[in-house]
Image (cartoon, rainbow, N blue to C red; front, side, top):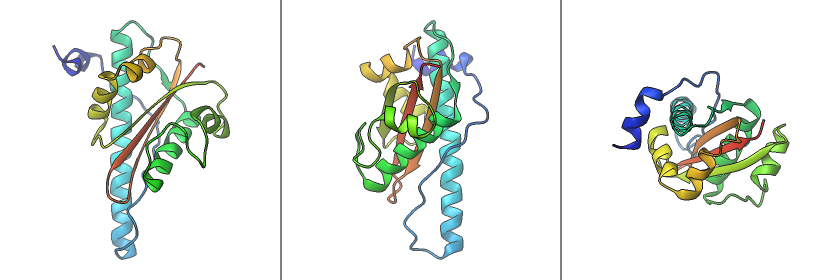
Length: 170
């Protein structure tokens, strides 16, 4: 039975989570660019909440508590996704913003414990499946010591989505 079918009954809502999308390079008139940026921001918020719901359902099914979304971790995750998207790289360490621990601290959170990143996945379900099928990412998602999470997705100017998921101890 696929992970998604097993998790479908366990999906839990993740409310109050804000996300950021990086708009396309402004080549169109301002009104058109604004509507593209708004549409991307809405998709990023929807897909990020979806990734969080699947992650929590997976954790609960595996015997862990659901993690709660934290604004500070969402900020750290969004910023890293936006940085990777803007500068077209894929790495846990940014030459501009440092490690996930440093990014979380700058966003006001002191207890970051792990980070998952991805790019190219078009929605929350697909990025969750990608992480669940990777031993290291799966271990981060199923670490029962995690109590909080932040998820961020941003679009590169060519439309490629970049994802970051940060877990915390408190």
